Length: 252
Ligand code: PGA
Image (cartoon, rainbow, N blue to C red; front, side):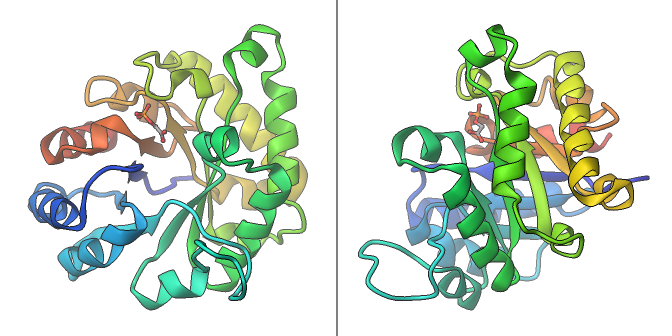
């Protein structure tokens, strides 16, 4: 089964609208002929600038979060429909920083995911274990719980719009990457859970990204693993040349 590589840049709380526009303009020619889904995820206020700059190219734009309600009294929140309207096609849900700092749980991941699917956004759902969980031998248990809770009630059809991002929390922004073997072992486990939930035919089609200090120097080896189908990139996605090089190496 060949799954198309998907590489997304999670810009986090970086890049003003003007900076986002400039970065997308610089990135477009560098990734124009690469056989991968290329996504950039700027902050909310930079989305329109990024969508406009990416128009007609193979760079797609995603948001970093959404609220689960369609509209209503939720001061400070943004709905899936609002993003869809301005040309956003992807959204990251359940990033570890949202779980750690903003009280995100598997239940709220599930609610946001359903809202995103209803608006026909493609979702990158993040899962990953903490260092103490890895060291305590709890990685599979933690991931199983996150996946079963986050993906609760979804159908096989829904999974066509879902990408899983496995991001070991201890590897995010730390410069520590899981070895390709360690990452592959965990990705294989994630796929096993997907088989349990949705059957093997569907599970084989779902793309699983690795995230956590992926760089131009390690993307080829990581994405070369059987169950690693791309990456969710923080730091290395903030410069066009390094991000393009990372993608080029990943698809090589
Ligand atoms: P990093 O972040 O590439 O800077 O480690 C990845 C992420 O948080 O998605």
